[in-house]
Amino acid sequence: MTPTPSIDFDRARSIVLGLQQEINKVLVGQERVVDQVLVVLLAGGHVLIEGVPGLGKTLLVRALATCFHGEFSRVQFTPDLMPSDVTGHAIYDMNSKQFQVRRGPAFTNLLLADEINRAPAKTQAALLEVMQERQITIEGKAFTTGEPFMVLATQNPIEQEGTYPLPEAELDRFLMKIFIDYPSEAEEVRVVKLITEGVATGAFQLSDVRALVQPQEIAALQGLVCRFTVDDQVLDYAVRIVRATRDWAGLAMGAGPRGSLALVRAAKAQALLNGRDFVTPDDIKLIARPVLRHRLLLSADREIEGISADQLLADILEQVAAPRR
Image 1: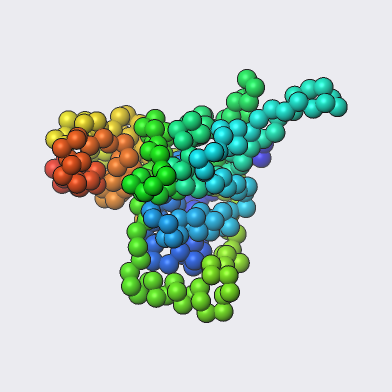
Image 2: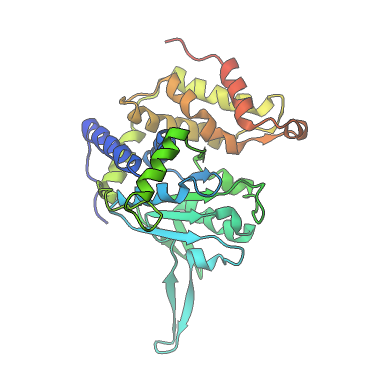
């Protein structure tokens, strides 16, 4: 295994700024979404991206993969997709009279699970082990994935026809759930111009996006972010936010301890994007909603009223006092 190189803060900041610039070349008007995906990458987690078709979910992942010298795989989730189509399987070789392991697309660094909620729960659950343990078991033998390893899953809103809700256990494995929304009018005009002026394919070209980092550098970035300082008062603030979800009016189920861990991990990565090597309460507030929204279960009356998890989280962030120093 190639040893992880050391990296200083200035180099880490330079890489992050470069990634932001390259991805924003093709994903117009979604700067905050790009930043959130980079937070997940730096924190060593997985991300779920939700939005209606045509907003650039797949383009975002392809652009990140282009910036990345590591391996990239894509799985288009469909109703007939089998778990072995994701993880791999063993086949019997008549010549050697032995079973040979055929590795699936999950053996990679970046795995795009496209339209993950188009597949039934059995296939969705195939990602559970690989997301949590970074390993895949085939015929009783465990195989490790690439290092670093990140699942970037896209899904359409669950109200659309032909979609299946993700199991709660799988949702909890995603560090963040990100919403990608329609661009502004000016941004949409820019997108149409970029695609229609001299481009016959009707899609963005990724040839202008530069490859910036090696897998070892990503691992070094993740190690650096993990060592960032979190003051005890700031850590206590993050935990109080998560604990408040457990008995908040309108929530049938709050976030568990994994939510507290995810909130602090993501806040460290957000600090790097903000040019710091320590976490502030503002970092916690900024990423609290994408970290926690998919870990909450609304009560039936709130769902009937059309209240969203983000609205309740906004109330919680307003009521939970942040440290003053």
